[in-house]
Image (cartoon, rainbow, N blue to C red; front, side, top):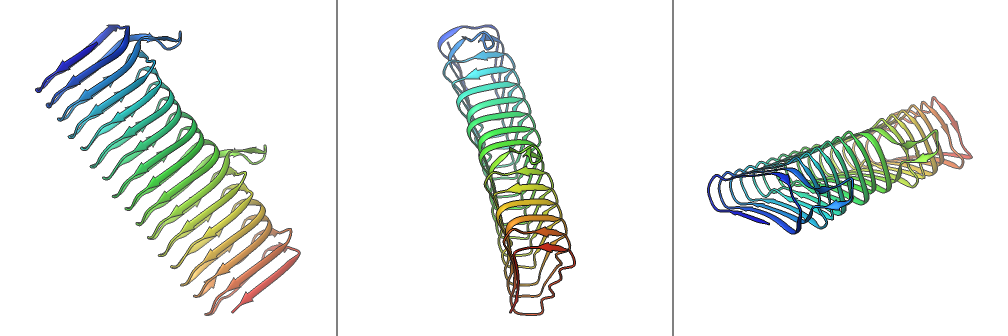
Length: 382
């Protein structure tokens, strides 16, 4: 079944019971078009395919595409809109072999607020300009890719998202906001925010078999992780590994949730003045914090257990490194570069092997008013 509407302000509405063995195609030309699909297209719960495939292609112009019915699609579901400001809404129940939504350039809004199951790959992409992508329903997919392109973008996952393999969220240049407040289960999860003043906030329940990676480009970025990442007390691993890489600029990284990490936890910030704070409950195989050059502040004020090595490194300039919580580790190394480094070890620090504190040139006060238990303790002030 093919519906081909030429240029102009077109309105296409499908609201019945549809069974199409091959492709259902809705194509409109340039102009401000409205495409609305409701009704029933097979049975998702009954496993009866109503469509072989679905293709919606809205040409140039400010278009609105809305799917609010029930869609059992054996093959691919493709929704494409051209340039200009487009709105794509999928609020029904859908099952498809693959899903592709390409909203093109313009200030676009893409919303998935239904119950969506994709056997293989689910891809959502928007081009340049300021875009809003929101997933608030239930999404299950083999893999998930969200690419918001350049512009000041907002990406929100506030539903129940389950991805068998990789889930990746990418934004380009300018100031972007990425917020995950729902439940996310994935083989791996990567959030890649380009240059600009970016805000990345995770505050839900997360289970990632492989790596959870948050990477931001140059600019003043804020990365905040709260919520639950497994169970430390219950011994349930929530993350295979954790990697946070904040690019150049004065960045703030804050971890205040509960983190059960089977492998490594790595936090890296580049030059400029950065703040890294761990005030939650963390258990990891290893821990590495590298704050780079700049006037940095690193604070550990939570309950932190590291099976192997815990290492904190700061570069040149005046830094403050403070441990006021409980830190248990196989070994602990604090390496402060050139500049005046301050900050006490005022917590409970039991370490199986060696504790080493190294400072560079300049006047560095090293204060240990807390409790330190270790096989060896070395303070190297150059």
